[in-house]
Amino acid sequence: MTGSTDWEDFFSATPVPTELERVEKEASDFVRYHLSRGKPVALVSSGGTAIPIELNTVRFIDNFSSGQRGSASTEYLLQEGYAVIFLHRKQSKYPFTRRVDQETFLQAFLADANSSRVTVREGFASQLHTVLQEYQNCNASCSLLSVPFLYLSDYLWYLRTLAHVLSPLKKQALLYLAAAVSDFYIPKDKMPEHKVQSDGGPLKLELQLVPKMLKPLVCLWCPEAYIVSFKLETDISLLSKKAKEALLKYKHNVVIGNLLQTRKESVIMVKQDEEINIQISHEEQSKGIEIEQKIIAVVKSWHSEYMNL
Ligand code: PMT
Image 1 (cartoon, rainbow, N blue to C red):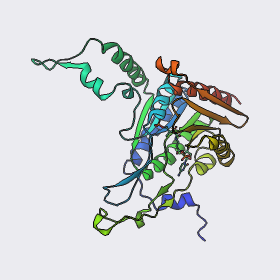
Image 2 (image 1 turned 90 degrees about the horizontal axis):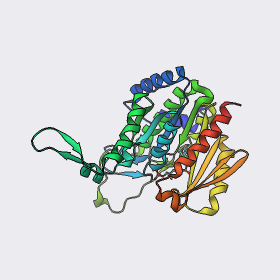
Image 3 (image 1 turned 135 degrees about the vertical axis):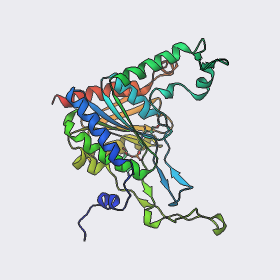
Image 4 (image 1 turned 90 degrees about the vertical axis):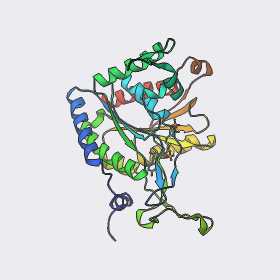
């Protein structure tokens, strides 16, 4: 008997990211700055975590998430007056740039052949102007801190550290956990050092369960924060039941349930005494309205109620 918990064992056996100390320092400065101005701070997690199958990693198993939910929600939280730590999967969707696709980027700019001047082509200026102006406002107020990850182990170390950093904000902290987090992994001591060879025949993998980190997050790391988690299902008949079970089990504030197939049009938001359905019509979508805008309006109002309790 060691007396340690499964999540403590996980961290003892999992290497600390090389950037952790720097990230912790930057996040502490960020939180101190906004705390002194009375601004609420949100930690948004976004994108999928990957788990390597070799120490010298050629292959990994991925969790699906484009990063749309997290990056769009970040923009709306910034609009609602939050400062945001954006803990995101490298190369997944990012606030502001998500609204300019690669093709638009290439088409929008014109390089002068005789000088180093770059101009914006007619027809693209207003779209780019809106995005850049929002980005510049956010930059001027130092309201966005970016923390990228690729692997599950890095994500979980950052989550734990950032939750500790946010903890002094007490009720003013919001954790909005939209990342798609792996439930299975291969511990470091069970991973082959080199690339798995295909001449050994079909590959058999044994994956271990990742401890559910919501438990220590809610009880120990950031106990007074307003914590919103997501529940992803593919079967509609399970969604409401699973979301309520998660709320009961982890005793945090809100579970947002979504189906993989309809996540851009419909979610349920469940808290202790209420369950609401948020939907977005095709007409609203065609006007560029996103479901994240509606979700964040509700999150902000519930978080404000909580702060005033
Ligand atoms: O990025 P998009 O393409 O827009 O897609 C958005 C989304 C569908 C990924 C997002 O809306 C979403 O549902 N994210 C959560 C996905 C997920 O991990 O669901 P889950 O049912 O596996 O986990 C439920 C909760 O447990 C999550 O809050 C997760 O952070 C937490 N968890 C999961 C695994 C683990 N080891 N520890 C955890 O605490």
